[in-house]
Image (cartoon, rainbow, N blue to C red; front, side, top):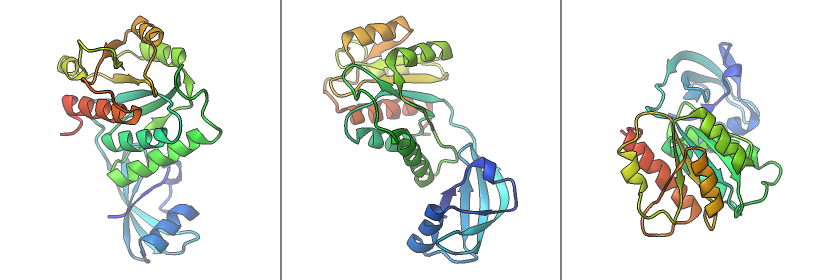
Length: 241
């Protein structure tokens, strides 16, 4: 069934009019007409049954019906992602959303992008919404504004939970081995940019309660490392069952 994202604050009445982008997608791309059923999700874990009562590319009107609360994932995963150069962050946001990430914090680190251009955070939030729609999620991951690494590390320490820093120099302690011992608590994963985290940054992370872990003998691209780390964590803690 076609799905469409509408923020919870717009779902208080019995009818709602979609914005131009969502309306155009339903009418021009999916060719839906009045009477067609759609599934609305609010990004906070609720799905609503909807029916098109007026089909126009400038503004589709939906009649809202029964609401369903979708169970939350068994574990929450936060990704502290050093912002890479180019459009790789787009891929990371999209694919980790599909994998069930809870929260994404773009981090400014020594070897990564100095500062994202204006509008990037808004773009990443749009990407996460679209990926949630496509993958059948009723919630949308939080995508925070970019912060300095030391700020992200301090916030992570205050939040508690299991904190793991992916580092290509760590050969003795693989992520999979650590995940076997992880209780069903919030997990925070720190992934570096191209070139990885510096040794000083890893030491700073350790000072905030992070354990340095590896992903095996191969050097992975930043976007691959993030996806592998999230997928392994989800698989180990029941998020893919």
